[in-house]
Image (tube, rainbow, N blue to C red; front, side):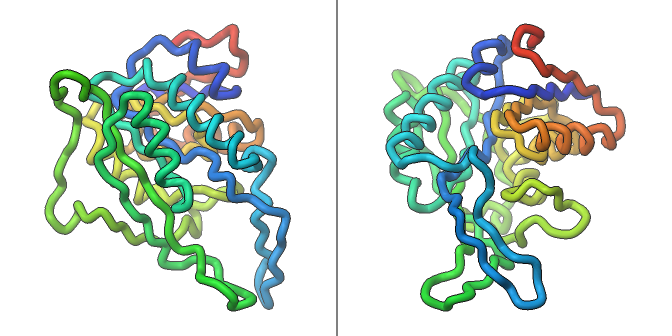
Length: 254
């Protein structure tokens, strides 16, 4: 039975409490892309990019925050482990530079094309239909350390992926929820069965759901009580899922 640890708390406070070594870190962290604008859509629900206070930073503060969480999680990642980070296109170089300075080896930038992006109402710019996924590994100082990489087949290994944004029954109230299909794809490539995956910005828990379905264990950290409940409720529905919840820092034992 796969174990799934669900932790309510701030990532930078939670991470020092974790002792287990991690096979992969797969995260969809804050993007620093939120704004107060609301778009009125005829015949549809108003569209807002005010995702929540967790996605508001000054640029310099966002980069400090990014460095802090990568530096904090790095000791947990096995030398053979993979780091996979979703980010907006404008921050590719900044985030890559941060983890390279922390000793990671950059391998690829993958582009996720959303086939059904929100429409451009004013028609004065491009639709926001693409995001980046950065892949890096540890273990490249003096000698090459083998990292997990499962080549699935020529047609499946493009560095350009197309899927719709999360829709239908899969969709929760989390505003930036990633589709399970794309997370399952990366879990198959960057981990093996029985591996342990860390998602320290867990949101609605899609990484944990995909990990369970693919016979992996997971550690999910989420700071928002509403999203933590959404995640907990989703994982309760999974067959044979061993859920271990921590709501207080002092209780964490992993």
